[in-house]
Length: 369
Image 1 (tube, rainbow, N blue to C red):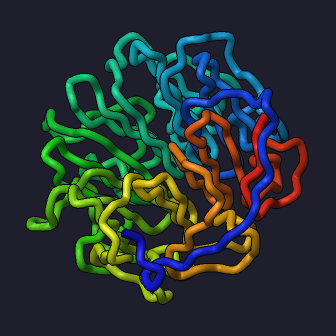
Image 2: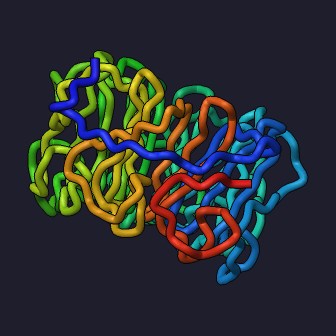
């Protein structure tokens, strides 16, 4: 049961999508751009920073960036993107100054480029600031790109222009990256994090400038179901459905009711029925079991999609009668797909990343074509 004392509720009537709205299957919000896959397995992107056309080009509406019709998933980082086909083949494009495309060089690519024949078959990918990681079909963890903060987990601070296996384990389940830190789950639900820890974003119970360049875990945390890594904070859901967050909290993105950083995973509400959590720059959103959407943290650009511009330090529920199937949070904007397959975006729109044909910030969900 959702208790009103634990979660604030905001009502409102949201704009409805047209009957002809496109159907979408998956979406990923990055720095100033968004990419998504339609139900026909085509790939579309919009915004800027090189994931759509030239690096300084702005695209204000979804634009198909490949003629392929076998895309399975896409992830967007600060200024690059990678996507997988249904066969687990990897393509990457965008900025590449740190080698984050994993193509063996640092050359900018304006369109998806297929990785070489030595690339593993992939199950999933994660993209962050200038780094990328992936889980292979053998459940091995591989990372590449900028490693200046140890975020590649390879035991040093060096960058890599091709995927390099992290350790020798073959029991990795998922991985996600922030600007300078990374977290991953093993198949037994154990959490590992590495990279920068100046804000406590690794959730190790410490704040320091030490080298955390290999995966580190904290025994006794319980079994994690999912993790999401933001700029300098992280959140996760345990197997009992409870959300915990840790790291930087300058805008209330931990949902703890204050703006105090926390280096230890802290439960944010008394409810235990969360199905998803997504972190972005300094904002966080989650989905409850009934499909309702909650958001908290930085809202200066409307990133929370609550109809105003006020930051929130606790989860806020928007009563709109909608059931959300998926959410994603970027640096200053967010997107979600409803259970009817319609895609909505909101928040910062300086470069058209909301995908509604203009550059006006939106503080409520706006249908994407």
